[in-house]
Image (cartoon, rainbow, N blue to C red; front, top):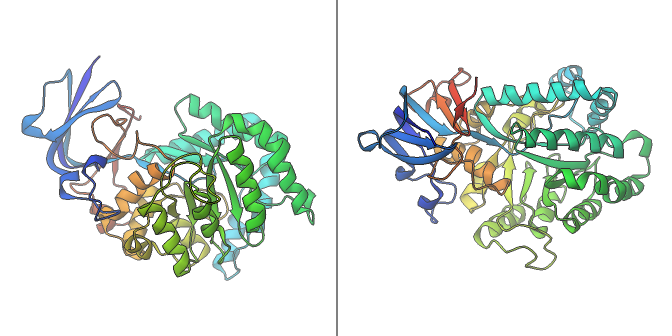
Amino acid sequence: MTSTLLTGISELWTLDPALDDPARPGGVGDEQVLQEAALVIEDGLIAWTGPVGQAPPADDIVDLGGRAVLPGWVDSHSHLIFDGDRAAEFEARMAGQAYRAGGIGITTEATRSATDERLRTLVRERIAEAARGGTTCLETKTGYGLTVADELRAAELASALIAQGELGEATFLGAHLVPREFTGRAEAYVDLVTGPMLEEVAAHVRWIDVFCEEGAFDPEQSQRVLRAGAAVGLGLRVHGNQLGPSGGVALAARLGAASVDHANHLAAADIEALAATAAHPTAPGEGPGRLAVDAGPTVATVLPACDLSTRAPLAPARELLDAGAVIAIASNCNPGTSYTSAMSFCVTTAVLQMHLSLAEAVRAATRGGALALRRTDVGHLAVGARADLHVLDAPAAIHLAYRPGMPLTHQVWKAGHPIP
């Protein structure tokens, strides 16, 4: 077993979970950010962190030249399995047209028509693009096929990329939109999603998701989808309260979903419900109506790049944190409303426009994303974590917000190896 010592780290964000302060949910303590530090990697994992003067010997030494090191971004919400272009829709929206969920159907048509090879190539290119910006663990969803065969194809593609170590997590989103061939027959489409489609896809994914929104699926239909997924052992995710008070947030909190994403339009009761899941996380199956197959809070995943692209009200990340809820920041990379995987841009936006501190935003884009995916091996650089490193071309992480839009990713390591 060979070891590698990384020195020349001006600022090392370990975000060690063992050092969390329960009184500061979402905060980062001074002891979780080391100055003039070093770390040792062995067998793809973090083996040691500490002051550079106390570093143990190693087989190889890499000097990072006085740069800051963060955990790799954990992007817990993306839609990468698609073909087609919706630039015209974006241009129209920038000219004043409101966003509606129906644009998903345009992507569905293009994706159904794509060959397997083309789709695989497109997805791998998008994963590589995200990695170049510091993302080392990436979730993505099905949802642009919306037939049994096309959803299975997307799930099998995602599963294969996970097996190859390129993708982190796969989610079944057959309940993305009612496709055109089911117009006026939403209940029949829900029957398909919760029956034959789920039966084919379930073995290839870890999660099930639903777009609980006007123009997509109402809370009753959404609950049917989530119950079916939980019955076959899938974890729960929800698109909720993006376009209005859809009931998705309340549903996610009540059922014990791992995350509810978007969360733009929240009433005080929604914020309180999410905070309650953080203060009193219940075990799987506990609590009235709870369906979750895993323990933990319902993470509110905010998607700032999407909010900007749709000119929606920014999700109330500040209020959620202040109330004690757990938040994550994700890209929502998709062709219609957030065609970017730039997590650094999302972090910068969270600081400059959502009123988070730099530490809160970095934590939400790393530890928060990991918690939304119920992962303990990524999102931090404590001993035993996967050695996923985001090396900045800056002496401190605050440069992400101080120098917005600048290309500050110097190097990315995944599982102990630099990404070419």
